[in-house]
Length: 317
Image (cartoon, rainbow, N blue to C red; front, side):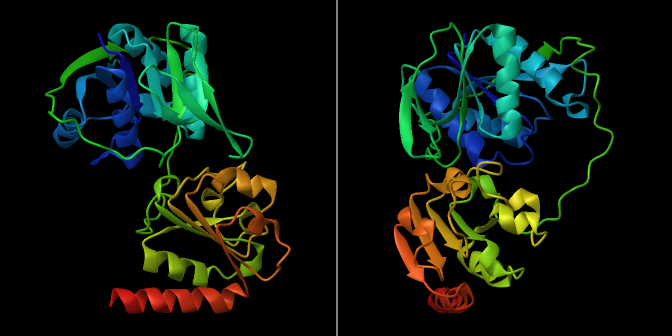
Protein backbone atom coordinates (compact mmCIF):
# COMPACT_ATOMS: atom_id res chain seq x y z
CA UNK A 1 0.00 0.00 0.00
CA UNK A 2 1.33 3.41 -0.98
CA UNK A 3 1.66 6.34 1.40
CA UNK A 4 1.46 8.94 -1.37
CA UNK A 5 -0.16 9.01 -4.81
CA UNK A 6 1.08 11.46 -7.45
CA UNK A 7 -1.28 12.43 -10.26
CA UNK A 8 0.39 13.10 -13.62
CA UNK A 9 -2.08 14.13 -16.28
CA UNK A 10 -0.19 13.83 -19.57
CA UNK A 11 3.41 12.64 -19.09
CA UNK A 12 4.58 13.31 -22.65
CA UNK A 13 7.95 12.03 -23.85
CA UNK A 14 9.78 13.36 -20.77
CA UNK A 15 8.37 14.21 -17.35
CA UNK A 16 8.03 17.90 -16.55
CA UNK A 17 10.11 19.37 -13.76
CA UNK A 18 6.97 19.95 -11.70
CA UNK A 19 6.16 16.22 -11.89
CA UNK A 20 9.66 15.34 -10.69
CA UNK A 21 9.18 17.76 -7.79
CA UNK A 22 5.93 16.00 -6.82
CA UNK A 23 7.69 12.62 -6.93
CA UNK A 24 10.50 13.96 -4.74
CA UNK A 25 7.98 15.18 -2.16
CA UNK A 26 5.99 11.94 -2.32
CA UNK A 27 9.08 9.86 -1.64
CA UNK A 28 9.66 11.79 1.58
CA UNK A 29 6.20 10.67 2.74
CA UNK A 30 6.84 6.96 2.18
CA UNK A 31 6.07 4.47 -0.58
CA UNK A 32 5.00 6.24 -3.75
CA UNK A 33 2.46 5.35 -6.41
CA UNK A 34 1.61 7.30 -9.56
CA UNK A 35 -1.71 7.69 -11.37
CA UNK A 36 -1.25 8.62 -15.04
CA UNK A 37 -4.16 9.89 -17.12
CA UNK A 38 -2.47 9.73 -20.54
CA UNK A 39 -0.28 7.25 -22.37
CA UNK A 40 2.85 5.95 -20.65
CA UNK A 41 6.03 5.34 -22.65
CA UNK A 42 8.80 2.97 -21.58
CA UNK A 43 11.18 5.90 -21.10
CA UNK A 44 8.77 7.72 -18.79
CA UNK A 45 8.12 4.49 -16.86
CA UNK A 46 11.88 4.20 -16.25
CA UNK A 47 12.00 7.85 -15.17
CA UNK A 48 9.16 7.22 -12.70
CA UNK A 49 11.12 4.29 -11.30
CA UNK A 50 14.24 6.42 -11.01
CA UNK A 51 12.28 8.80 -8.80
CA UNK A 52 10.96 6.04 -6.56
CA UNK A 53 7.53 5.10 -7.95
CA UNK A 54 6.66 1.53 -6.96
CA UNK A 55 3.34 1.28 -8.84
CA UNK A 56 1.89 3.11 -11.83
CA UNK A 57 -1.88 3.14 -12.30
CA UNK A 58 -3.31 3.50 -15.80
CA UNK A 59 -6.94 4.13 -16.84
CA UNK A 60 -8.91 1.54 -18.76
CA UNK A 61 -12.31 1.74 -20.33
CA UNK A 62 -12.13 5.27 -21.71
CA UNK A 63 -9.94 8.08 -23.03
CA UNK A 64 -9.73 10.69 -20.29
CA UNK A 65 -8.28 13.18 -22.76
CA UNK A 66 -11.64 13.42 -24.52
CA UNK A 67 -13.30 15.10 -21.54
CA UNK A 68 -12.88 17.88 -19.02
CA UNK A 69 -11.80 17.17 -15.44
CA UNK A 70 -14.85 15.19 -14.20
CA UNK A 71 -13.76 11.73 -15.39
CA UNK A 72 -10.16 12.42 -14.31
CA UNK A 73 -11.35 13.11 -10.76
CA UNK A 74 -13.40 9.91 -10.77
CA UNK A 75 -10.42 7.91 -12.03
CA UNK A 76 -8.12 9.47 -9.45
CA UNK A 77 -10.58 8.65 -6.67
CA UNK A 78 -10.57 5.00 -7.76
CA UNK A 79 -6.76 4.99 -7.95
CA UNK A 80 -6.49 6.52 -4.47
CA UNK A 81 -8.71 3.80 -3.05
CA UNK A 82 -6.81 1.07 -4.88
CA UNK A 83 -3.41 2.36 -3.73
CA UNK A 84 -4.46 3.00 -0.15
CA UNK A 85 -2.62 6.33 -0.28
CA UNK A 86 -3.18 8.80 2.54
CA UNK A 87 -1.78 11.78 0.58
CA UNK A 88 -2.56 12.76 -3.01
CA UNK A 89 -0.25 15.25 -4.74
CA UNK A 90 -1.18 17.30 -7.82
CA UNK A 91 0.14 20.29 -9.76
CA UNK A 92 -1.11 23.64 -8.48
CA UNK A 93 -2.45 24.49 -11.95
CA UNK A 94 -6.08 25.66 -12.45
CA UNK A 95 -7.01 22.18 -13.69
CA UNK A 96 -5.08 20.50 -10.89
CA UNK A 97 -6.93 22.53 -8.28
CA UNK A 98 -10.29 21.77 -9.88
CA UNK A 99 -9.51 18.05 -9.86
CA UNK A 100 -8.46 18.38 -6.22
CA UNK A 101 -11.79 19.99 -5.33
CA UNK A 102 -13.83 17.31 -7.08
CA UNK A 103 -11.68 14.57 -5.60
CA UNK A 104 -12.18 15.94 -2.09
CA UNK A 105 -15.94 15.56 -2.45
CA UNK A 106 -15.63 11.98 -3.68
CA UNK A 107 -13.25 10.97 -0.87
CA UNK A 108 -14.49 13.35 1.86
CA UNK A 109 -10.89 14.52 2.06
CA UNK A 110 -9.27 17.78 3.13
CA UNK A 111 -7.64 19.93 0.43
CA UNK A 112 -4.68 22.28 0.79
CA UNK A 113 -3.76 24.38 -2.26
CA UNK A 114 -0.80 26.67 -3.03
CA UNK A 115 1.54 24.36 -1.11
CA UNK A 116 5.22 25.34 -1.18
CA UNK A 117 6.60 22.60 1.09
CA UNK A 118 5.59 19.32 2.74
CA UNK A 119 7.07 17.72 5.86
CA UNK A 120 7.48 13.99 6.35
CA UNK A 121 4.35 13.79 8.54
CA UNK A 122 2.20 15.42 5.83
CA UNK A 123 2.21 18.92 7.32
CA UNK A 124 1.99 21.41 4.46
CA UNK A 125 3.40 24.91 4.20
CA UNK A 126 1.04 27.10 2.21
CA UNK A 127 1.64 30.47 0.56
CA UNK A 128 -1.17 32.95 1.32
CA UNK A 129 -2.14 36.61 0.89
CA UNK A 130 -0.30 37.12 -2.39
CA UNK A 131 2.78 35.38 -1.03
CA UNK A 132 3.08 37.75 1.91
CA UNK A 133 2.86 34.91 4.47
CA UNK A 134 3.45 31.19 4.70
CA UNK A 135 1.07 29.21 6.89
CA UNK A 136 1.29 25.69 8.24
CA UNK A 137 -1.66 23.33 7.79
CA UNK A 138 -2.45 19.65 8.04
CA UNK A 139 -5.58 17.83 6.91
CA UNK A 140 -7.30 15.85 9.68
CA UNK A 141 -9.14 13.57 7.24
CA UNK A 142 -7.90 10.02 6.42
CA UNK A 143 -6.80 11.27 2.98
CA UNK A 144 -5.14 14.65 2.36
CA UNK A 145 -5.08 16.29 -1.08
CA UNK A 146 -2.27 18.76 -1.75
CA UNK A 147 -1.75 20.89 -4.86
CA UNK A 148 1.89 21.98 -4.96
CA UNK A 149 3.40 25.07 -6.56
CA UNK A 150 6.29 24.43 -8.94
CA UNK A 151 9.88 25.55 -8.31
CA UNK A 152 9.79 25.13 -4.53
CA UNK A 153 11.52 21.74 -4.33
CA UNK A 154 14.72 20.61 -6.03
CA UNK A 155 13.98 17.33 -7.87
CA UNK A 156 16.13 14.47 -6.61
CA UNK A 157 16.09 10.88 -7.94
CA UNK A 158 15.81 8.02 -5.49
CA UNK A 159 19.00 6.53 -4.05
CA UNK A 160 17.93 3.19 -5.56
CA UNK A 161 15.78 3.13 -8.68
CA UNK A 162 12.59 1.08 -8.55
CA UNK A 163 11.03 -1.11 -11.22
CA UNK A 164 7.43 0.04 -11.05
CA UNK A 165 4.66 -2.39 -11.76
CA UNK A 166 1.52 -1.28 -13.57
CA UNK A 167 -2.13 -1.73 -12.67
CA UNK A 168 -5.29 -0.83 -14.57
CA UNK A 169 -8.05 1.24 -13.04
CA UNK A 170 -11.50 1.09 -14.58
CA UNK A 171 -12.72 4.62 -15.18
CA UNK A 172 -16.08 4.86 -13.35
CA UNK A 173 -19.01 5.61 -15.62
CA UNK A 174 -20.49 9.02 -14.85
CA UNK A 175 -22.87 10.48 -17.42
CA UNK A 176 -22.80 13.92 -15.77
CA UNK A 177 -18.99 14.12 -15.61
CA UNK A 178 -18.66 13.06 -19.25
CA UNK A 179 -21.47 15.28 -20.54
CA UNK A 180 -18.99 17.84 -21.92
CA UNK A 181 -16.61 16.47 -24.55
CA UNK A 182 -13.54 18.13 -26.03
CA UNK A 183 -14.16 18.27 -29.77
CA UNK A 184 -10.98 19.95 -31.02
CA UNK A 185 -7.54 21.09 -29.92
CA UNK A 186 -5.19 23.67 -31.39
CA UNK A 187 -1.51 23.10 -30.68
CA UNK A 188 0.32 26.09 -29.28
CA UNK A 189 3.27 27.21 -31.43
CA UNK A 190 6.60 26.12 -29.96
CA UNK A 191 8.64 29.11 -28.77
CA UNK A 192 11.70 27.22 -27.55
CA UNK A 193 11.36 28.93 -24.17
CA UNK A 194 10.66 27.09 -20.92
CA UNK A 195 7.09 26.81 -19.65
CA UNK A 196 6.15 29.89 -17.65
CA UNK A 197 5.07 28.09 -14.48
CA UNK A 198 8.25 25.97 -14.37
CA UNK A 199 10.88 28.46 -15.54
CA UNK A 200 13.82 29.23 -13.25
CA UNK A 201 14.03 32.71 -14.78
CA UNK A 202 11.11 34.88 -15.92
CA UNK A 203 11.32 38.21 -17.73
CA UNK A 204 7.97 40.00 -17.63
CA UNK A 205 6.73 43.15 -19.36
CA UNK A 206 3.80 45.39 -18.53
CA UNK A 207 2.11 48.56 -19.64
CA UNK A 208 5.52 50.22 -19.98
CA UNK A 209 6.45 48.16 -23.06
CA UNK A 210 3.77 50.10 -24.96
CA UNK A 211 3.07 47.19 -27.26
CA UNK A 212 6.69 46.27 -28.00
CA UNK A 213 7.76 43.05 -26.25
CA UNK A 214 10.92 42.82 -28.36
CA UNK A 215 13.39 43.92 -25.64
CA UNK A 216 11.68 41.63 -23.10
CA UNK A 217 11.85 38.62 -25.42
CA UNK A 218 15.46 39.30 -26.41
CA UNK A 219 16.58 39.42 -22.78
CA UNK A 220 14.56 36.28 -22.02
CA UNK A 221 16.21 34.39 -24.88
CA UNK A 222 19.67 35.54 -23.76
CA UNK A 223 18.95 34.19 -20.26
CA UNK A 224 17.09 31.05 -21.35
CA UNK A 225 14.05 32.45 -19.56
CA UNK A 226 10.28 32.41 -19.99
CA UNK A 227 8.37 35.54 -20.99
CA UNK A 228 5.62 36.82 -18.70
CA UNK A 229 3.30 39.79 -18.76
CA UNK A 230 0.95 41.86 -16.64
CA UNK A 231 -2.79 41.77 -17.17
CA UNK A 232 -2.69 45.25 -18.72
CA UNK A 233 -0.34 43.96 -21.43
CA UNK A 234 -2.39 40.84 -22.20
CA UNK A 235 -5.71 42.74 -22.16
CA UNK A 236 -4.21 45.20 -24.66
CA UNK A 237 -3.51 42.29 -27.00
CA UNK A 238 0.27 42.80 -26.99
CA UNK A 239 0.87 39.19 -25.92
CA UNK A 240 -1.25 36.09 -25.32
CA UNK A 241 -3.18 35.63 -22.08
CA UNK A 242 -1.22 32.46 -21.36
CA UNK A 243 1.73 34.73 -20.51
CA UNK A 244 -0.19 36.61 -17.81
CA UNK A 245 1.39 36.47 -14.35
CA UNK A 246 -0.79 37.40 -11.40
CA UNK A 247 -3.85 36.68 -9.32
CA UNK A 248 -5.97 35.89 -12.39
CA UNK A 249 -3.08 34.43 -14.40
CA UNK A 250 -0.16 32.08 -13.85
CA UNK A 251 1.55 31.90 -10.47
CA UNK A 252 5.33 31.63 -10.82
CA UNK A 253 8.09 31.01 -8.31
CA UNK A 254 11.37 31.32 -10.23
CA UNK A 255 14.88 31.83 -8.94
CA UNK A 256 14.97 35.19 -10.77
CA UNK A 257 12.05 37.40 -11.81
CA UNK A 258 12.74 40.50 -13.90
CA UNK A 259 9.86 42.98 -13.99
CA UNK A 260 10.04 45.58 -16.77
CA UNK A 261 7.52 48.40 -17.01
CA UNK A 262 5.12 46.83 -14.49
CA UNK A 263 3.72 48.97 -11.69
CA UNK A 264 3.47 46.07 -9.24
CA UNK A 265 -0.19 46.24 -8.24
CA UNK A 266 -1.37 43.64 -5.71
CA UNK A 267 -2.84 41.44 -8.47
CA UNK A 268 0.57 41.18 -10.16
CA UNK A 269 2.40 40.66 -6.87
CA UNK A 270 0.12 37.72 -6.06
CA UNK A 271 1.58 35.79 -8.97
CA UNK A 272 5.30 36.38 -8.47
CA UNK A 273 6.06 37.46 -4.92
CA UNK A 274 7.54 34.08 -3.98
CA UNK A 275 10.34 34.50 -6.55
CA UNK A 276 13.74 34.10 -4.89
CA UNK A 277 15.18 37.31 -6.42
CA UNK A 278 13.10 40.13 -7.95
CA UNK A 279 14.63 42.79 -10.17
CA UNK A 280 12.36 45.72 -11.05
CA UNK A 281 12.83 48.21 -13.89
CA UNK A 282 10.51 51.21 -13.98
CA UNK A 283 10.70 54.90 -14.85
CA UNK A 284 8.49 55.82 -11.86
CA UNK A 285 10.53 55.82 -8.61
CA UNK A 286 7.23 55.66 -6.65
CA UNK A 287 6.09 52.47 -8.38
CA UNK A 288 4.82 49.87 -5.86
CA UNK A 289 6.98 47.18 -7.46
CA UNK A 290 10.07 48.65 -5.78
CA UNK A 291 8.56 47.77 -2.38
CA UNK A 292 9.03 44.05 -3.03
CA UNK A 293 12.03 44.17 -5.35
CA UNK A 294 15.44 42.95 -4.19
CA UNK A 295 17.08 45.18 -6.80
CA UNK A 296 15.52 48.21 -8.47
CA UNK A 297 16.52 50.17 -11.55
CA UNK A 298 14.85 53.52 -12.14
CA UNK A 299 15.02 53.94 -15.88
CA UNK A 300 13.49 53.35 -19.28
CA UNK A 301 13.22 49.63 -20.05
CA UNK A 302 14.04 50.37 -23.69
CA UNK A 303 17.45 51.61 -22.51
CA UNK A 304 18.06 49.13 -19.71
CA UNK A 305 17.01 45.81 -21.26
CA UNK A 306 19.06 46.06 -24.48
CA UNK A 307 22.16 46.92 -22.43
CA UNK A 308 21.56 43.93 -20.16
CA UNK A 309 21.00 41.65 -23.16
CA UNK A 310 24.19 42.84 -24.86
CA UNK A 311 26.26 42.34 -21.69
CA UNK A 312 24.86 38.81 -21.14
CA UNK A 313 25.61 37.83 -24.74
CA UNK A 314 29.11 39.27 -24.40
CA UNK A 315 29.79 37.25 -21.23
CA UNK A 316 28.41 34.10 -22.83
CA UNK A 317 30.75 34.64 -25.76
